[in-house]
Image (cartoon, rainbow, N blue to C red; front, side, top):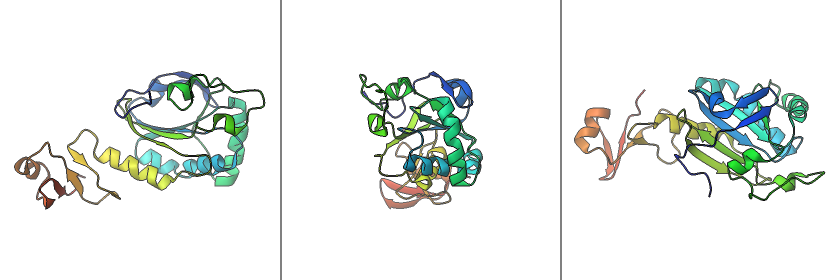
Amino acid sequence: MALRINETVPDFKAETDQGTIQFHDWIGDSWAILFSHPKDFTPVCTTEFGAVAQLADEWEKRGTKVIGISVDGAEDHKKWKGDIENYAGTKAGFPIIADKDLAVAKAYDMLPAEAHLPEKATPADSATVRAVFIIGPDKKLKLSMTYPMTIGRNFGEIVRALDALQATYEVPLAAPANWTPGEDVIVALSLNDEQAEAKYGKLDKKLPYLRFAKAPK
């Protein structure tokens, strides 16, 4: 069964290009984003990891750790990072998990249980290892996205989604379509009008069940 929203994500021990990690310990009290890729030294993935590297300051502002995963080994990851940094024009300081046995890919339901990597594996052999998992400080999955090999991910959307998740985390609020920071948020129906106004101020009621309020700072 696929990993579900609000389910605790699998913990694992793995090698990375920066050493061994225990995933839950590595997350600590931070938010975390796990980016998966089918193979090192592939074109779309290089542009994506370049985009992740260029957003280093944005991840830090949001208290978020980012980590990549690919089916190649740690030494290949180190070599690939040279290409990523040349392309992006900046340092790629995040770790990349070496998932040569597909243990993490299977734990996160990115591949069939019987999947294996043949000798001289190509990106097609691990094509579905191409996902994004946003994980909260509680180690629970907050959002996931899966893309085909031919479409690079929109990291502006991933940052926007992270902002929305953080703005609505453990509070009775939701983010409307196309929401960006600073815009009004939706008050949950668990609060009546009086409770909502006491908590968030004057409401902008579009419909009885659609009530907007200023986002808390």
